[in-house]
Length: 98
Image 1 (tube, rainbow, N blue to C red):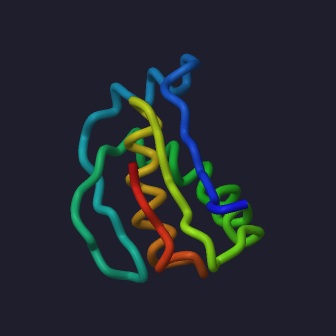
Image 2: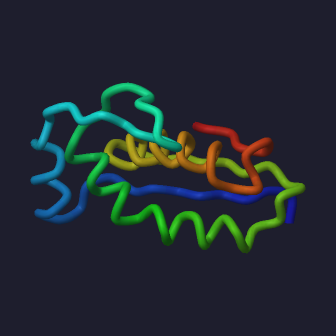
Image 3: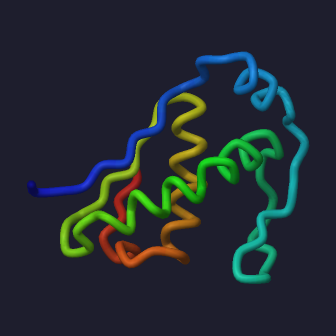
């Protein structure tokens, strides 16, 4: 009742292991602006989850802190989620990354 949590787990299946090894860099584009380079495989994985993450966040109370956490692969996905949610959610002022 005091906060929201979004948690990403570590690598657990072959598709994710393959993504881990797609270590080339891709442009990270937000709102039409190139924000830098990111790991290609991890960006692809996050892009597959982004809609689900955003719809989950849309149901959260925007007045409460929103903690975004992850382990291993999940840590990378949490970092990409933070960048996405900071631009595309109503909880942007409440985001906390661990």
